Amino acid sequence: MPSKLIPTNAVANQAKHPQIEMSPPCTRTAPEPTLCFLPFPASVIIPPMNSSNDRLNKVILEARRNADRRAAGYRERALKLYPWVCGRCARTFTHANLQLLEVHHKNGNHDDNPPDGSNWELLCTYCHEHEHSKLRDMAGRSDTAKELPAATHNPFADLKAKLEAKNKRG
Image (cartoon, rainbow, N blue to C red; front, side):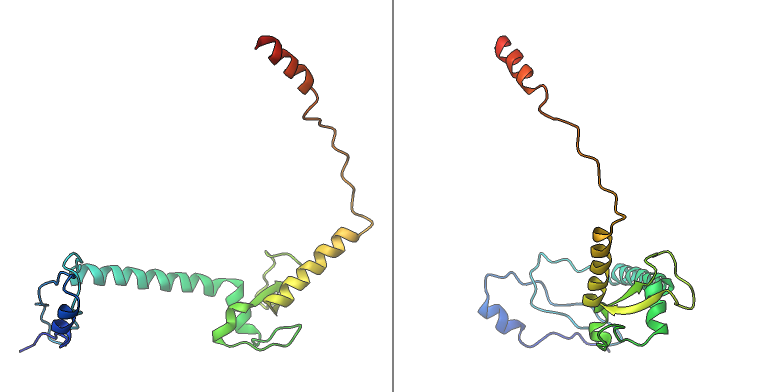
C-alpha cells in the first residue's frame, strides 16, 4: 500500500514560524513515491496533476518546436559545419560560452545563406562587433559618400508674427 511522504521537519517549522498558516497534510497517494512539500501556506493552490502535466507537456512540445526552428536557421547550421573557434582571434568555445560565438556574413547580405556555408564565418562577439565597426568607419570616410543637402526648413519662421497675433488677442 502506498504511503504518504511528509517531511519530518514540518512540525518543527510550524513551531519556529507560527504566523504561517499551515495547509492540511498531503493526502495524495500514488503507486510510486510522491514528494509533498510541507509546510506551505494554505492559500497556495496546488493544481490537479492532470492539468499540470498537460501544461508541462505543452511547454515541452513548444520548446522542441522552437529548437527545430532554430536548427533550421543558419546559426545552427554554421555551428554544425565549422569548429567552435573565432575566425579572427582563435578563441575556442564550449557549450558554456557558445552564446558569445556569432555568425558573420562575409558579403554583408544576411539573406545569403548557402547550404555549404561559404558566406559565413564564426566570430566571437568582440571580433564580430569590430568587423562591423570597420565597415561603418570605411563607409563614413569614403569620397563617394554623398553629402546631404543643407536643411531648408525653418521651424521658427513665423514665430514673431504668431506671438504678435497672440498678444493682440490676449
